[in-house]
Length: 559
Image (cartoon, rainbow, N blue to C red; front, side, top):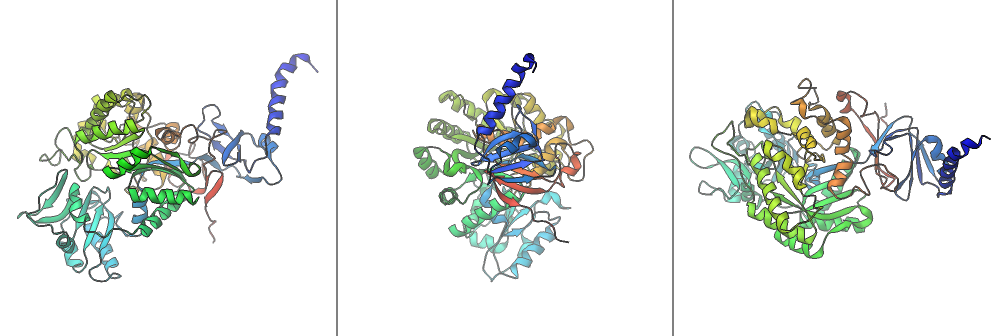
């Protein structure tokens, strides 16, 4: 043998020997196209899993050295594998609730909303509440808020309350108004607005904090129903390739249910739960301290969820200047700035992250200001505070995200849902700071992506597609809406894998298919990193794995 080759061959032989000395894998994936989202080894065709973690990523030939007598080997026939997708902003129990109440998503007229409620009323006893969610007047021919008369005439004997798609407005019929005791004399609450008729009577729609006037008398789900909703929502998420979600506002009861399921080893999901704004729940958890990677790395409770303003669709988003299509309002602040700053300071002292809902440019500025003051009072280097949505930004505030270390947690599918009417609300100038992904990225931010389900559909590939194309499912508009704000395809993949992990302090154990990290991955029927943008939306999830175990497998279609 040529002695000159020995220094080159020795490391190869040593690596092979070390690999042979490893214990056998539980699962081996071969003949796949694996996008690891690991810069050190971005593409592979095989992977081994042992003990719920990635053991090896490399070639199909090399991985077989880890095959043992009980190793399961799956030949994927060239299918695509990506890390488990994580929705960085969803509402778990609300999704479960939406799966069992009247579904109003996709309605194209008020008449269609009423028809769906009438169909449900036929199955209900008189006096029983009918609850629904998902209407959006911007999708109707008449884009004004509806009034209750038509709903009242069609369903006079049941109280009805229908939440708008974004959760920031609700429509009540006369029976619900009577049950709530809401009359012309009822005043608008702080941070809320009651739509009224000419004589001052409630027209039926309640915006932001005004919703509480009706919601306080709506029968609440039982604990058993909430638990069932949570389990149904997780199962639904898994079929879309989600291996985890950041639950953007969990109640004390929901947190208890998560822990109950975790103790019973019944989650099979990575839940990053944000504690909803409630003083008693804050007191409890700030005293207890963060829960990190609890119950076999299925549950994290180490963040809080605050609210600055409302939503753009219901004109509740707080703007620096009045709405273009209604100059009488600049939106609503649902929390006082002093509250945001005070909670942020307490959270920093207790070791909790703060994530605040802000949509309008004024709402975002108020949150950035509150964060800045809190961090001066309680300096913490790696706080990873977040603004949830960050939809409309003043150009002056875009660089502040990176300089303050604040993460813009955004939902790309909101852009493709809102682009048809956002210009009417904002005018052309403010649109330059709307859904400004490229501007934020170029200023040093990362953008964890989500859906805000059930506001948008659960499928994370909708937001992946929107991020790279800024187009809807019909390829409109050509080249995308404000295309200069697109993400690259690689950024779009990180936005649903590694960046949510970073935004939850999980990047060392999740977000990429790197040896030693949790073996959460998804098998897809086509290569979303190479097909044209349009076919991305037709991609089917073939299997979802959490910790190396299949939690969802697509059943073959029987002819």
